[in-house]
Image 1 (tube, rainbow, N blue to C red):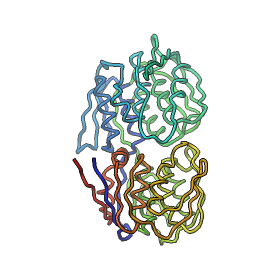
Image 2 (image 1 turned 60 degrees about the vertical axis):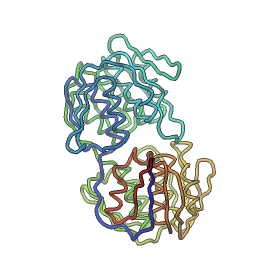
Image 3 (image 1 turned 90 degrees about the horizontal axis):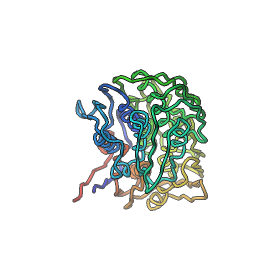
Image 4 (image 1 turned 60 degrees about the horizontal axis):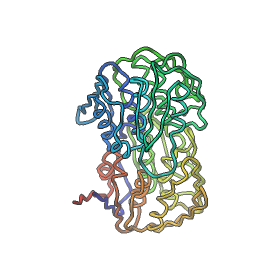
Length: 421
């Protein structure tokens, strides 16, 4: 087990390069199973979740190799020798369920345990299964295992998602590219990660129209070839460093970003009183220290991302006045609030909203990362808190941030990783 120890430092200054998107690379790794040849993926964020997904591919018979100091990944699908994903891997990461679509359409059978991951609320897979059923699959669920089977090829279908689920959109999209006929996904998720997956699949020979809109049309093809692809920058990592600059009254340039992907975060930071300027592939964030209270409501893209809710709550705990943060995506995504209160934050939970009374100072404390983004929020609070902050359970943080302690130290933060037996 490891811990992070943080002490208050001077304002962060300098440049930080943003890694490839975790939420993009995971479905793209799964999609590589669909090809009949070797694929190469660049801008790989070397994270625990990426390693788990690679272990999952290796288990079912694919060849996986990291290259170029683990920034590139070579995947050789080969002949998939197993259609059952192991519980010990799936239980570690919810995104492992994305293996079901590729396995089902490629082999005609997929057995996947119900997934694990961060305990941030209910994230049922019923929308994924609704799509597979509409395409002709037979679904059985027993003993915590979901089995999907199809005789011959999946059939194109019109599928309406009750909620624009990113995971369901990705899984159905991957299943549909080798189906017989045309599949239409209505009320589809429109996140940049969906577009990145569709771009990769199209480079492999898939026929996809409308990715990035709420209606995606997929005309099934008979086979896909291997391809090369570069992962888009991680908009959530970028947003986290933007808030790190803001909360420390810093002056930071983020490189390797797509500013359009960060519009909701940039807009909210400007409303809070932070200066944000954009170039083609970079964002410059400067903060004078005067932070205004604002209201924030999480929404599906292009609304304010739920994955940034914990971080902005940490920032607003330093703002002047009362802010209201409303979470509409996950019902259990305020677990960071109890830990922030240990650091002196004045936050009250009412239903799906957090009422945040800004404080002039936070104080260091012993805290625990209850999930990935909660851990990021505690790091941000620790950067500006008086005294020492010690964060345990940081394996959650390592699931989504590449060398976050090293990157913050390069900007002037006082943060150390302590390894324990």
